[in-house]
Length: 121
Image 1 (cartoon, rainbow, N blue to C red):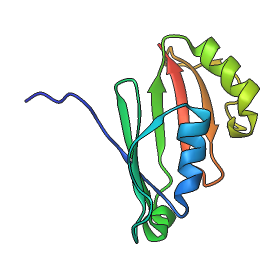
Image 2 (cartoon, rainbow, N blue to C red):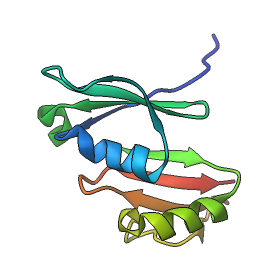
Image 3 (spheres, rainbow, N blue to C red):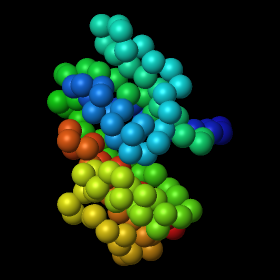
């Protein structure tokens, strides 16, 4: 059995919150959108990564995910994000920190408490 990609679903009460984090801050692009439906959704993409964003209050209330993005240049990612979108820096990990497991990390959190940890091994 072989898998080639993991594509998470992230639910928001207002899909604009997800677009602010993933397209504005992290520079993903919208590859597919259905914003005019009863249940708006879209696929955001960057490099080989994809995420489904859904507007669904019931599911958003049940789960605020934490995901990790690996990078090969955490210093550049941190410099850019801290300069352009400092409001997303997570108060508990708002600088690049060497973690006990050997990875360098910093974290982002949007106003709905979706957490994205940027990580370099």
